[in-house]
Amino acid sequence: MFKRHSKIFYFIFFLAGVAVFLLLASPSLSSKVKPFFVKPAVEKSADSLEGRETESAEISKIFGAAINTATTTATTHSQARSFSETKTAKKISLELPILIYHHIDKLPQKTAYPGLFNDPAVFEQQLIALKNDGYQTIFLKDLAEALTGKKQLPVKSLALTFDDGYEDFYQQAFPLLKKYDSRATVFVIVDSLNTPGYLTTKQLKEMSASGLVKIGSHTLSHINLKIASDQQIREEIVNSKKKLEKILGQAVDDFAYPYGFFNGRDEQTVREAGYSSAVSTRIGKYQSQNDIFSLRRLRPGNRVASGLLDFLKAF
Ligand SMILES: [Zn+2]
Image 1 (tube, rainbow, N blue to C red):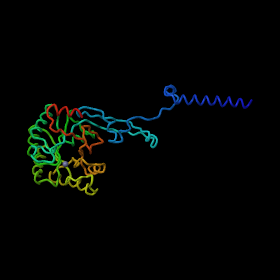
Image 2: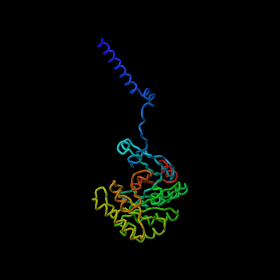
Image 3: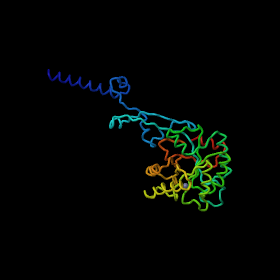
Image 4: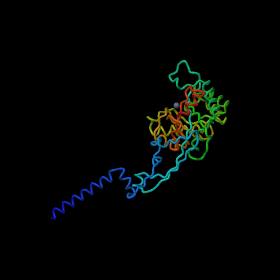
């Protein structure tokens, strides 16, 4: 008798177990019993704290330079578990094309790097197209200030940048910048100044005084930061800034990584040296507060008129 009752008891217990299992396993059923469970205190957008690894998640398209400010209350699984605290992160991002140029000159008969040349006539057409479409050229410092919430930029802002500091910038680009009242930043290789083919200190001063050109550092010797020692990197980044500031008598705020090579250590060194921004060769026009020392750029190539404007919109 007792044994029989015991079997019935175990059978009922088994059925109850199966019922509980089905209840938990079935999504439709579990949703019905949701009120009985405590909802996990997890809110999304925690990845905004993680920097550029999550840039795709951050992309909220705002056209022109409209600022996208997102204040997020972020509590990740891990944070909730390990710290039991809530962090508030404020990030600013905007879409602002930074165009990258090298030479503004006729393509030489012999050159190993034809892609580095833009014909002055093409460059002029590009300036005209940008101006007619309502773009305003800004300095990178303005962008850095916008990304840190210190400044508001015109809706259609754009930055022109020129790497290496070739003399043709003074001869070909500078007159056109004056003609179309456009601003540009030139990244010079400090040890190459006053050598054949490169800008002179006199030209730098004249252009800097015009208010249309800002001079940035492209290191002392165009060193490949990827294979340089920590000490070399520091010297190239810190001393190029100091030398340029001595030449110009004003602050040098912007840096460009030679060959586009950089890592977190280089970014940190640039930041510590007192620069307010750095450009990379990462492609795009999406600029974020997390990437002030690794800003993205776009290569306009020979695109002119609507070809150039469509290219800028496409990214
Ligand atoms: Zn370069």
